[in-house]
Image 1 (cartoon, rainbow, N blue to C red):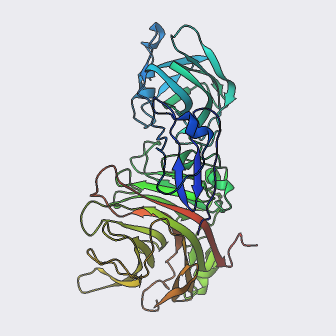
Image 2: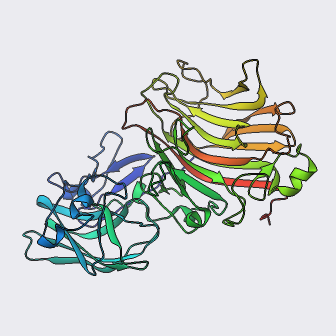
Length: 484
């Protein structure tokens, strides 16, 4: 289990969080509700004395327009319209281009978050100023650089000040003349945790060189979900909406109920890693029996020689943080947290499911055979490991709660599939499937692991999402091309 930690920030109007006995309390700051005496003396905090949380919601912004903005193909208003699609951006080729926004009244300003245009591909140089009257300006940041790794919002902490107007000057970027901001937000206080962690996913100890990522956005205008390459992930790619480092050393994957799908045949969104044994060698195709994928040890020797690995072993440690509570009864609260995917079928889909009235969730998996029934449908079987998979089950005995850390181990040896669920202080739960009659020993069949949040609810309230934090992801294969 994740241990308790203590975080304290003492600057004026900075959120202070104190976790004692795993109880979180955060003092108020920003706006008119700040209690600075509580910030200075965070003492005697108990479970019954939890101060108001600094929500740090962004202010409502409008753009201050000058005459030169009228002919801009991507006008400044796009930067505050709430639309995070790349097509809705402010863009200019001007050096030292200026964007001025109005918060409507004088407010406490402690941070901004910016979604840069192609922010994971460009490093922008910029300055930020603040003003109460749009005449006298206070310099807050001068000639700073963006990270070049954020696809979503990037947090920029500011010296806390009172301001009504905020001015962003872009001095250019390291890639081209197209300087752009998709969205800018102003916040009452710094929020250096959660979605805006200062760490990057490649810095938490999880190897990302042989995975690519699917997220439910469409920045490349393909009509399907975006794919983030192995090289980009290994270089520290982060996205505050879908994929970011957690405060406790993991990677958060967050999938909304609605968004772009990976293909026309897929009904659900996902934020999910796909195993890529080629490790960025684009001369190797993603599909096929080749060095990017692996085969079962039961496959013919000709297929084994062509593949990137033989058999598979996957170890994952995670905590599911959020599941849906609304929607069709068979979809509520369910996600897939790990898979073995073949050409078209899935030797295993590992599920976590928690119903709204239960405090604990179930873990079970599906095994899809390539053998069909009399109706031509693939024969699929389910194995319940912890709790059950029904739509109206009681609270499962010894189930797994949200935010409870646990591990799963998926192993394939020849034709034996073994799944193990482990928790600290509890006996392992183990299940086996004999796959000799499942058809995956065909020489054309190839496999790859998938890890993440495959969100199997497309009927929930639009504001709902599913989220899990991953602390360990280790994959290995016999004869793996890149194994040590």
